[in-house]
Length: 236
Image (cartoon, rainbow, N blue to C red; front, side, top):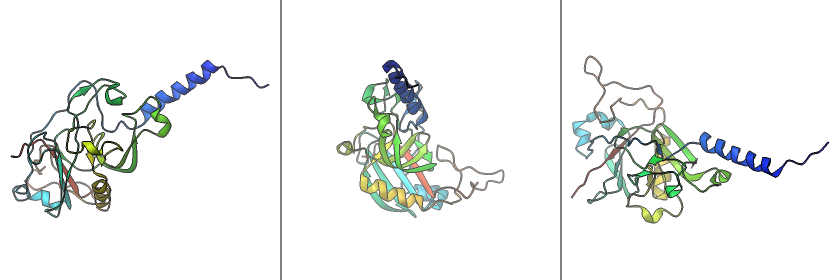
């Protein structure tokens, strides 16, 4: 016997599915909670390749400056084998606490791009995030963040979402590093092809990890040969 499903039940099922989808999807770009992420005082210049020789073992070194002023403010520099090959304007986190609903955020979060030394942990070419978006954004799979290179939890380098390109050069993101489209795809494929590297181990403050004999320690041969440095330096 066929029975019609009550309209209220249909809406209840839709909202239940919405809640499940949001919690199950990756919250890229958001640092959830009320505790501000800690910034580490780090500095990377071309001289660092000499003062910290282990950094030269990475094929690519990506330096993000999240400063709001100075000639290198809101820029990214990409080095290959120690040589600068790209420099572009970017957008890092707005650097403030935002309540659920602000900038279409789905939860209370800090829009901070934490400083420090990192390596890529996960690459996602066609990534979508549920951290931001309208009420029914789950129907489209979330906000598009193409060519995402994750390096610190839900923080990633990725192509600037459509309509935000004009903000490059200013703090404007929810915590991720927004890139111009031409750099986003180029950097993604460059780093992707380095998978299988055995990288030097280091601390988030940029100091090398040494064994009891003072020798450089290395990870397993399954990483990407790329070092990502986020700093906050005003350069006159």
